[in-house]
Length: 429
Image (cartoon, rainbow, N blue to C red):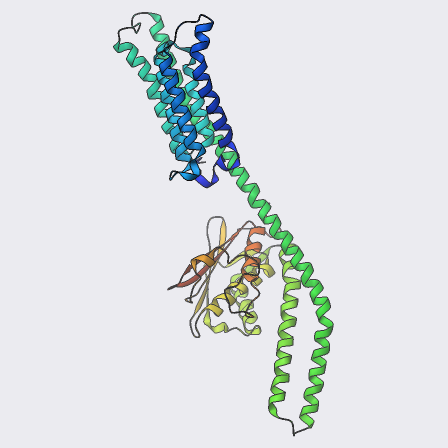
């Protein structure tokens, strides 16, 4: 798994940058006091100017990190550059205080570890390269100056130190980076599960609301229906009444049927998604059911061209039917009169795909990300509730599937509902 993390998905947003700043301020302070401490305790004399220079560079880079929001550079680039500077400064100090013999050369690995925690793969391996070159340069300078013990066993020990440093740097970069990537992938999965749980809770609330609405609206709608029937009978007996009144009554009855259909659909659709079990479905029979459902809902079924590459498949029948009808209904509404809408079923290694494609006006880029949100609709006011794609997406996720929407203003919209290949009566974990 890659640990190449985007700048927005970095640890910087969770508070790691402040502690890195505090750590570097502490290092800058230590660089100022180390030469004085050595002199006080008689450990030897260090060249103060190098330590003061390193402290100044560390402080300046810390100021740049503090003002990162006002600078044109990305946070990751600033942090990576700061760690590169730290490695170079540490190598400079090591060169002037013992070279490769200095036991504190292992501190170079600290910067690689920090990079593996905070940065992307590019910066991690850049830090490994800079640290390796810096550490190797200590040996090269020592050899060129004639102070390197070429003929004794200590030289082999120093070469072993260089080799072990390179190995340790590579292992830290790979395994710590991989571990961080795994942790962040788990965090991403947990976040997705939380979103799914939230959506299911919203669906449960929507189902309860719809059931209550169906109960409350059922009686008055029935009363209105009876009253309109009686009114029509009276008007038919009195021929002096104008036909316009009859048409209005007929319109009232149509709207009543529509209200009942909407309320019943809201009450039943969520329950189907939650409780249904998968079963084996024959593709041609599924197409026949779709055609009947389209005709019953007043849609232009002959415009839908259906094709399948699989004879049968396993899926939750009612949920899949409602989801496919929702996709077909959207495509028919978005297409011009007479334009064909295509439904294709085909399978892959681990999933079955249901593709609905139209040649309509498409969906704008700003709406494509919001189109799955509940109660969001691109149709004219009163033409839809904005629940169709939300319920289709929720249905797909409940069965470990997916809903993908591809849209082009010139070519129309393609919706791909993918479900894993299931065994009958078995739901995926």
